[in-house]
Image 1 (cartoon, rainbow, N blue to C red):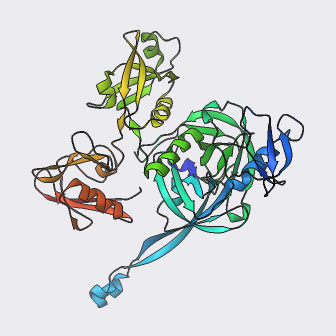
Image 2 (image 1 turned 90 degrees about the vertical axis):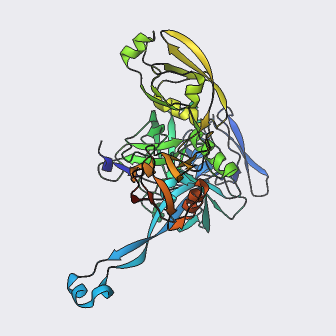
Length: 472
């Protein structure tokens, strides 16, 4: 699948209002729910098992008010080249000119709290200098970014409002193949706000090619509900009108919907949002293994009837898995009694833990089942995370204070390494500011608006520099 076959898109917000008034969302186990007016009086009772709602009307009316339209403005620098003819006559005065330009984008979002917290996609608000949210009642509010998580493409924004309609989170793990779902959003622009389409759950645990090498957690819900650019960040809801996913992407050869759409499961979204509200960043646990799907031969060698599980190809030294006793060649089949069938399953389960949380791993080694207790560590990908040895995570690398200065102890494979950072490089300046300790590097990088330029000395003693764009 070519990279340009994947088009990222947007969606809209869901609510708790119907044509009659405010609805208290029913849980999947409930068969009826009261409908209130603005004074809190019950005006009717909706029974989902009766003919009042034989279709998707309850889910649609219960959700659409909580889906919003998100418009963003991004400023960027545009360089205008000067004709060599003018440079010949006017010299330095005819150097290329840089002007600040603006472009606008749009997506959708879902209100999850009545005090203005809204979930959307990271790619919708990334690098935005201005964000405006329009509710289904046409009221518009300025919004601020609370936090983002590029690894799951989830972002949390907030508007200054209260008493807003919200959408309840459902347990996305309970979704079944063939179950009916609705996609709600603003496809192709503001004119088609609050568009609702229907489809079924076509597949679960889907992943897509990752061409830029960045760490991703992907376990998408695949549906055939029609979504298009503009639906990104909008709601995928079940028949009870509950949020089961955030619409995020399509696969298409044309840039428009061709039958395949993907949503981030609500269980992943719920954990990310909770971290962003509570901590301001995502506290991601890390097991510390390189894994691959289980082949039939590996399954047979492990004594398994089917290739359900993940093969441990490598164990990082000093990682949580290493300390727990996990070895290369082990087959991991359960984490805290949750079955692990694919690498995507393991990513999702580990993502639900925080650094310091404990769990029990069930593995197969030499044909025998064993259980190992594990304590999860922090993710090296989380910039600013301090390890036990005092080193600090910085865009996939580890930096620390040595006799030479602030040194790159391990370049890793993230953005820093991709930009040219190498082991042993001593960082002297970040964005023209002198650094004396690792925290200086972190603090300066956090304040950077668009890019990070690092200057210093290579391991061979030569002057060097490299730079990369900031995206978190």
